Image (spheres, rainbow, N blue to C red):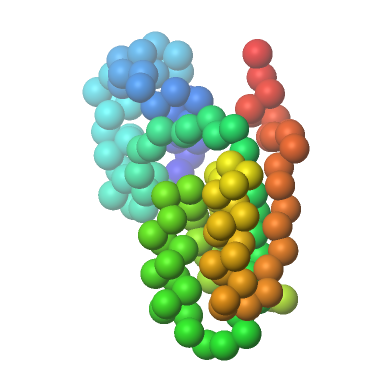
Length: 136
């Protein structure tokens, strides 16, 4: 991956709806050259997918410390929750990191359910300080 590929990725991260021609105009390449580079980035596994980023009203990071090893039941339950965007099995103190977008009442219900599997801690996002999200 060279500096041109990195520029293409940066542009796609900002706005993946741009055409190859529009990206090419920004970095002085033809649309076809941009398209070929994107294809190679996908084939090499550097770009895994193109997605839409949703602005959620609330975000929580929930660490789960399992009391028992009923991992598949826990994973099945968490994956069935619409407000959960990601669940990761992690190393360290916690067993899982769940990223959710629960409103207050649904968070309380979720917490009651996961407490059947183990202990938890909830960290709620109060502000997104990612520099690329704060550009105007």
